[in-house]
Length: 250
Ligand SMILES: NC(=O)c1ccc[n+]([C@@H]2O[C@H](COP(=O)([O-])OP(=O)(O)OC[C@H]3O[C@@H](n4cnc5c(N)ncnc54)[C@H](O)[C@@H]3O)[C@@H](O)[C@H]2O)c1
Image 1 (cartoon, rainbow, N blue to C red):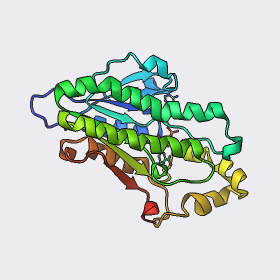
Image 2 (cartoon, protein in one colour):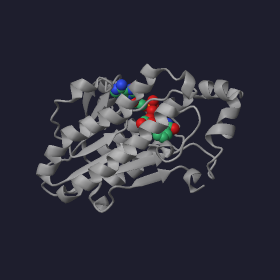
Image 3 (tube, rainbow, N blue to C red):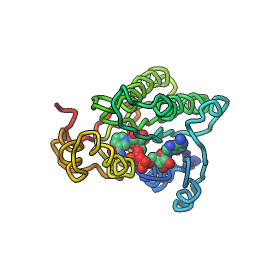
Image 4 (cartoon, protein in one colour):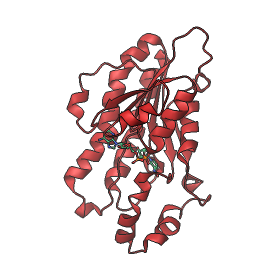
């Protein structure tokens, strides 16, 4: 992307870009010459300072009404910010359920909505939605997460259809369990809810369905995101790209 002779650098917004998969994506895009803005609830300034020329936007993306009036000038949007809560449906806190849908469905919708006019005017855009294997498959105790990621898949496909004539692609990436804080933080919850020792959660729950028995690395997801953001991926739209060690082959 950096070799577009004479052209100004492309600009990317990466939500949840201060940590985990988001930071890996921001780092990878910045390395290819993209000017990145890191949007995050916390740590955006510190993360941006680690990347040459990156900008920071400290924002709580669950405050969705504040996103309604935005007009954003980005060429690449990585909808990555996410959170997890595990509980049986009958015990799931309705406020937490709603917050997860705000962060992982409403905010992506509103940010896409804010970015499309600029992308359409430029005749180029890349929307990359960090979904999950849980955008394609269900797991018990994850009603908010699974339903939010399934909704994100639908949103992504509609944007692909509308954006195609304007040079805008929209895709989901679908990792299995990735080595980040989001996973580390749910090991204790998963152990409690499944009645297992914490040490058993990785093999008995997280890696049970995968053929490749290891966690995905954030840099591996970032490599896929970088490719989907590139000119070479212009015909890839409306799809989902799994990186789940074979989980969804079942
Ligand atoms: N880790 C996994 O195993 C895994 C697997 C599949 C998909 N994903 C998805 O990847 C994405 C990133 O997950 P991760 O594992 O890197 O998580 P993470 O917890 O390491 O990072 C998430 C980032 O989102 C930010 N964030 C959380 N709430 C926010 C809010 N209200 N406003 C703005 N920013 C907010 C956090 O501050 C954090 O920097 C999520 O959408 C997640 O669902 C993760």
